[in-house]
Image (cartoon, rainbow, N blue to C red; front, side, top):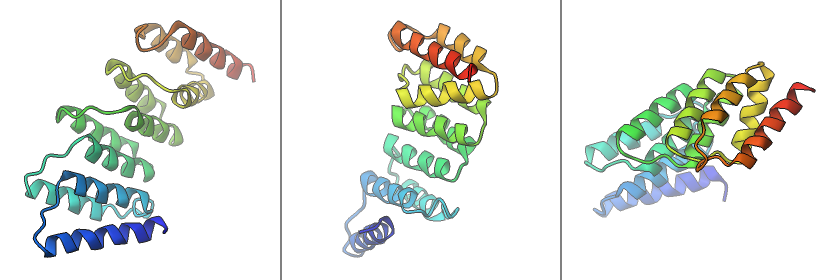
Length: 185
């Protein structure tokens, strides 16, 4: 079953739940919001369905959790709107929801796709402050992105600030080598 059919089926179940007086919970809403972001609706700029679900979640006095925010952030990243995604990220943190590595990774990669290196740098700094260790994909994208615009000095300065618990010396050396190698290309 493709993602659009799955989304439609999920909404059918959702409406059936409501019809038989079964109250949806936060997990139900998260599933539907995720379905919206994965079914191509966000690519088409149709985020109204997800926004409607968030309003309904609020109206029912259900509290959004990390999964809710991650799905909304992903929807914005799919739309190549990382600034809105980062605003949602800040709301997520303010709501005492802990962002995970995948959420931050989505934001960084989205900023990289739009060549917004200041945005990348801001998210990466947040990632480090929250002690979310970057994976190889994030580090590679970050280094190559900054190297493209000759901002590798920023990366080197940032990496020097990193606490050893988050970022090992071996990983630092690998990143430094990636930067140096990409500048020689």
